[in-house]
Length: 114
Image (cartoon, rainbow, N blue to C red; front, side, top):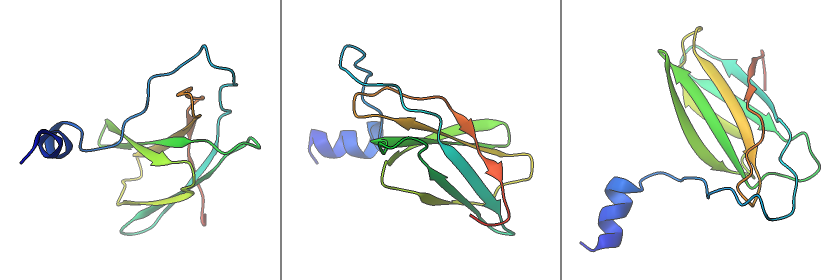
C-alpha cells in the first residue's frame, strides 16, 4: 500500500474545495435556488443556479439532529438523494466558482415535488 492509497483512504476520503483566489478576475456566485422533497424514507434535493454561468462546484449542507455536514458536488449535478430526514432537519446550498469563490448559502425550501 503506497502513500496515495493511505491518504486517499483515510485523510482525503472526500472532495474538498480549493482555496479561494480573490486576485483572479470574476464575480462571487449568486445564491442558488434550492428545494427538497420529504418522502417517507428519503429526501430528494434539487437545485439550480440563478446566474447564467454554471458553478464549478456546489456545497450541499445537511443538518441532521443538530449536526451540519457538507458535501462538495460537481456543478453539473442538479439532484441528490439524501436518505431520511426528520421534519426539524435542514438542507442548504451554496455555489462555488472555478477560483474558489463561494457565494451565499441558501436554505432549501420544502416542496411537494422537485
